[in-house]
Length: 234
Image (cartoon, rainbow, N blue to C red; front, side):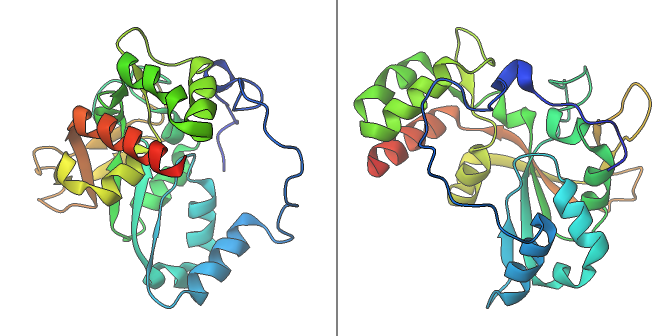
């Protein structure tokens, strides 16, 4: 929205998904903008919906600023991003927040219920080498994922962090997560730009909260669920 754009080519490559040849006969883009498409689908829904952003929150911030009436139709936001500790873009900031901190600030100040699925859990929910070894045996989807993950520029010998998919794991198995209610502020300037600051003591905001923050995860359960899900898809 304001900050100069920075991507993650060093991690995901120029295409975003190197290592696998995807079909080229893809559907045409929607004629409307992403913000308009979000507005239309949210307002047409028969019941409040859940948004699951796994990238920068730019479109959500623009949605709330342009069409604030959609908020009443949103049950919650389960957002991948942020961290209470060390960042992966700077020492303090996680990429999805760092790349558009002003959008993150708008989202966290929106009043919509938010669950933060950040690096505090995604750097623990690693796909182990044993899980990686099993993937090619699980059909076409497993073969595709193994090829993509082999070219993934994150992780080390202990495993690969599966940041985005943890949002879906949380929605399906919240019992695998440890969470805490707290207030999250987003820094939008200076050396801490993009940092998500959690009021862990509840003192600065007088005990008020604006987010449910995931602080721990059952990594074994995540690996088991991941393999079972890929096998079911085939």
